[in-house]
Amino acid sequence: MKYYIIAGEASGDLHGSNLMKGLYAEDSSADIRFWGGGLMDAVFHAHQEGTGLVQDYRDGAIIGFWEVLVHARSLLGKIRRCKEDILAWRPDVVILIDYPGFNFKIAEFAHGAGFKVFYYIAPKVWASRERRIAKLKAWVDRLFIVFPFEIPYFESKGVPFIYKGNPLVDAIDESPALSEARWDFLARTGLPDRPYIALLAGSRSGEIASMMPVLMTFADALHKLPGYTDYHFVIAAAPSRTTADYDLRGNEAFVHVVSGETYGVLRHSEAAVINSGTASLEAALIGTPQVVGYRTAETTFLIMRAIIKIKYISLANLIIDRPAFREYLQDFLQPDILLGEVRRILEDETYRARMMADYAEIREKLGGKGASRAVAHAMMEALRVDH
Image (cartoon, rainbow, N blue to C red):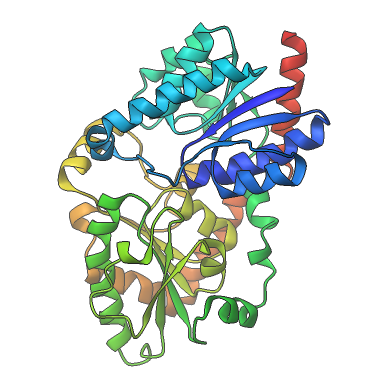
């Protein structure tokens, strides 16, 4: 069968690559064309010849309220190109991975053009923009969810779904970073042998610009404290960003930027300060104690506060419905608060152990391995029934 997959950011590229592995395993004649990134492209070339990648998400990635407005013409051009490519290629199914701003446009088009539409990793309508539920019902043939707390939510809304666990468990457990020796990681990345604090400032330009001054002030303050002068900090840069996007503010002697190594950075760090998103759940599954901080442009934050209606911003905390770790947002995110929280993580064994126990519960609730292949199998079965 012919599968047209659309992923628009780093997490979608990761989950798309694992889904592709499952599709190739379940369907020996699978022919895949996709919007994604390097991970999906690598899986494609391991199974097919030619070119499957239509658009790399890293080429002018457009995410965030203001970026969408500023780059509206470019975004509309990409939507038009995607529609034309789907019509020309005529897939058996269009598979959309998260990225709702773009993918709902494609869902409406593909449904209207008579193509089957599967949505993998549901848009977070439980957090905001609940009116999109009507669009899911109207334009999506099968919805595949990945969080246990989504089950009662979509049941209450009357939206049919398929749940096969969370693919992030596989992505982490099968990652070479989880078995790589510390010395090999340090040698490969060029990092000195020091105890590390991981810093994840986000992937959106507004978030990075807002987070970096706070992170650098915090790093400088912690590094100066007795007992912490040996500590260094490593920024796990988003794949779509460059070192120049991260202003180290004169702290280059003990702050390092490493790109495309998030799992390794988290695994070999004593603690992490994370700008929410998928990374906070990744840290929980890897076992890195963390504190979440979120700061972005004030206008963007005001818009978000008006539409978001969830108790926590971190997926890991949402999964167990209590704070496994602390979250500090916008003006509450201050360097001295981060300093106190990270010191507590490093110095209070009871506090750290309680966080690890919560992490174990989070992992248990997400289910075991094999989610990506199970979803691929369910997609195949759904296509067979529909045919």
